[in-house]
Image (cartoon, rainbow, N blue to C red; front, side, top):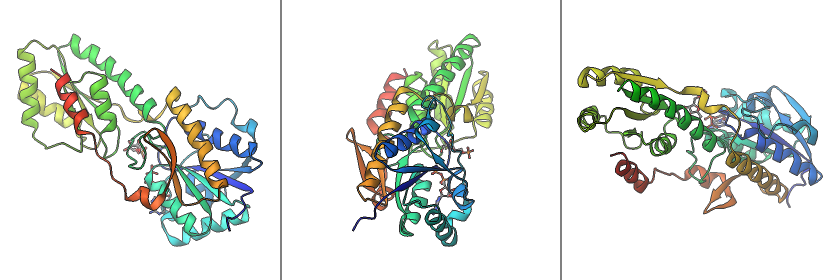
Length: 324
Ligand code: ADP
Ligand code: F6P
């Protein structure tokens, strides 16, 4: 028989992402509307182990849907990767009367959720990461805001790059995934896009491309380089030496993780947060909420973690066709 849920906890874990606050707000307000108490767990699994737990009322999450970051704070917690840490986490939940938890984070955080579920605490994951690298879902909370932040920054780099007739390498985040790079590459009309999924380490091709386009009269050359490839500064030095064209590297870094979430992130986080609560209340555990074929669904964590996804070949081809 499904365990009766009276109190749920919510935590954010791993790297923060714009829209996490909107997800927390949705969890709190939907749970309260359903007659359930909510406890906010600060600083991810670390805060759970340290019992940094506060009760959250509907008013505690007002005026926050538009804010970047996460009001609960987030952390990476090595101790939670151990069975002892996971047992302690479940014990803390029992002590605080927490029957179920919503974990907002990336797939590392899902493994923690899976562990808690094995310890008897009903757990549901929500995809919160700017990287879009969670295979079971077409969308992850934070991606849209991050990609727009990066796009606006790259537009600015392009202005000065054109004025000085330079080549500019702009490095975007994404860990080992190239989604932010591909989206910016297309949205910014970049001349080259370097994706970890496709990179062949043949720098000569990039150099030839720069020389060829300069001959054809292009004044700028924007290369979007994914963090998963990295080394933008040394790449810029080598490209300048080989082409004779002044080359600069800009690493956008953590600015991509901040800022007010876009409408898409606020909306998606709100629906996913609500769905997480309703999935818990339906007696489910060990699931993650994802967007599949445009529909919000609950997927088994084991299944979700076993899935893989790659960058769409057609999108890569279009990016190349557009960058003439
Ligand atoms: P993300 O959730 O963004 O992928 P991480 O991979 O850093 O970020 O994971 C966030 C946290 O999730 C880790 O610091 C750890 O506390 C927890 N976690 C990650 N992997 C595991 C695991 N295998 N077992 C238990 N907890 C884990
Ligand atoms: O997962 C989000 C992300 O911003 C990645 O794009 C990046 O590789 C990583 O986190 C950076 O982590 P940290 O904030 O710990 O430097």
